[in-house]
Image (cartoon, rainbow, N blue to C red; front, side, top):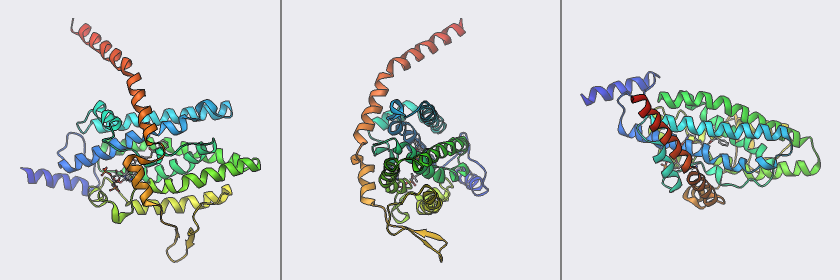
Amino acid sequence: GADALQHRFEQVVESEQRIEPRDWMPDGYRATLIRQIAQHAHSEIIGMQPEGNWLTRAPSLRRKAILLAKVQDEAGHGLYLYSAAETLGVDRAELTEKLISGRQKYSSIFNYPTLTFADVGVIGWLVDGAAICNQVPLCRCSYGPYARAMVRICKEESFHQRQGYELLMTLSRGTESQRRMLQDAVDRWWWPSLMMFGPPDADSPNTAQSMAWRIKRHTNDELRQRFVDMTVPQAERLGVTLPDPDLEWNEERGHHDFGEPDWEELGRVIRGQGPCNAERIDRRRSAHQEGAWVREAAAAHAAKQASRART
Ligand code: FAQ
C-alpha cells in the first residue's frame, strides 16, 4: 500500500541509493525537483546571453574560440537538464513557455550587464566558481538523472572556471588600465556572485525539506562560506581586492568572516526588477519565436520518417 511505498522511498534516500524515474516518489519530491531542475536549466540557457554578448568582440581568435566553446557548453548543460526534468513527467516546451512568460525563475546572476571583456573572465572565475561549489554536492543528489547530469556538467564547469582565471591572470600582468578593468569587474560581480547561493538559511523556505530528501546536500549559507574561503586566496594571487571591508580570516572559526549581501537587491532581481531581466527574457522569447520554423520542420520530418517506417 501507500505506506510501503513511502517506506521504500525513505529507505532508498537514507541509504544513499538513487531514486529513478519509474520509482514511486512523493508528489512534493517530484514538484521540488521539477522546480529546481527547470530553474537550473533556464539559468544555463539564459546564462549564454551575458557572455554571448562578447563573442563578436573577443580580443583574439584564441579568446573567441574559448568563449564560443564555453557558451556552447552552456547550451548543452541546459539540454541535459531539460532532459532530466522530462524524466519527471514534464515537457520541455511547457518549461520554456513558463520561462518566457515569467512563471519560472532562473538565476539572479544573469540579470547583470557585461560591460567589458574583463567581465567574461570574472564570470568564469566567480560565477562558474560559485556554480561548481553549488553543483559538486548535487552529484550526490538522491534523484539519479539529476545527479548523473551534474557529473558531466561539473567537469565542464571546471574548464570554464579555469579559462576565466587564466584570462584574469593575463589581465593582471597587463597594463595599468587592464588591471583597473579587472578590479572594476570584480567590484561589480562579487556581491551578485554571493547571492547566487540563495537567501540566508533563516529565510530559505525550501532548504530543510530539500536536505531531508537529499536533493540539496548543504544549506545556502554553508555553500556561500565554502565559496568565500575558496576564493580569497585566488583573489590574492590575482592581486585584486574583494569589495568587502568586513572580509577577514577568523582563526577561531577556521573560516573567513564576511559582510552581508544586500538581500533586498536579491529580492528585487528575483522579482524581475534587476538591471537586465526584461532584456534577457525578451531575447529568449524572440530566439524562441525565430526558431519556430526549425521546430516545425523537425516535427514534419519526424512525421514523414514515421509514416515511411510504417509502409
Ligand atoms: N536566483 O528556499 P530557497 C549556472 C529562489 S549556475 C533566483 O533557498 P532552493 C552555470 C528559489 O528558487 C546558476 N532565484 O530555494 C553557469 C526559491 O523560489 P521558488 C544555476 C533564487 O531552491 C555559469 C526562493 O528563491 N544553478 O547556471 C536564487 O532551496 C556561467 C527561495 O530560495 C542552479 O540552479 C537566485 N540566486 O535553493 C551558466 C543550481 N536563490 O522556486 C552560464 C541548482 C534562491 O520557491 C554561465 N539550484 N532563489 O519560487 C539550487 O541549488 C537551489 O535551487 C538554489 C536555491 C540554491 C539556487
